[in-house]
Image 1 (cartoon, rainbow, N blue to C red):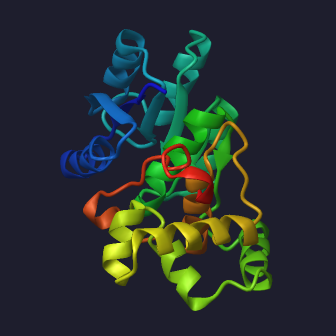
Image 2: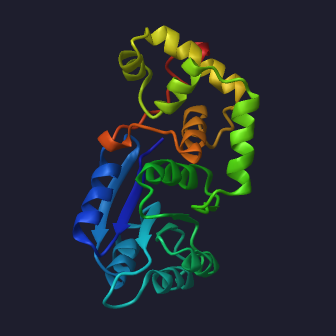
Length: 231
């Protein structure tokens, strides 16, 4: 599978550089361009034809993120657009304009799972930053699954490769692979052809607020193909 090609549009330089660094260090994602304003975002998307545009809603001066989405959709550009904002009231406007997803700007741990999910499944993903009914049900599902403390530790570190999890938890890589397989079974995670089991587990951990590893820009590749039947 080819890398997911991304453009980052954010007016604040250091914020943009942080997002770019986060994405560039994630296997399977390539940042092809950066934009500091709305007009530049439209131009770069038209030129580079990325898979995903990470788009800040407020980028003064000039057109805002909502207008960027409207212009790209009017031009029938197929780019998948994920809005970046901390203002809940603007989310519905972005969705109505044609955006495909939303990430609160402060939720850095959600950037990579959201980009991967939207790009691989090509479905909309608007996650409310508040505690939603969906999160409550997921929390209940995890509790009902009887996840052991050892399994919860692995789920917390699921963003790392198995070998790194093993090193951090002082376990063998084989033991970690078995725990990962048990997590997939208990949480009813199956390879659905669009999103790997690993990425589904990462999304669950992210939604539960326990996912770790992104402070060091680590991200696990899809290990379902190279570790045999245990994964």
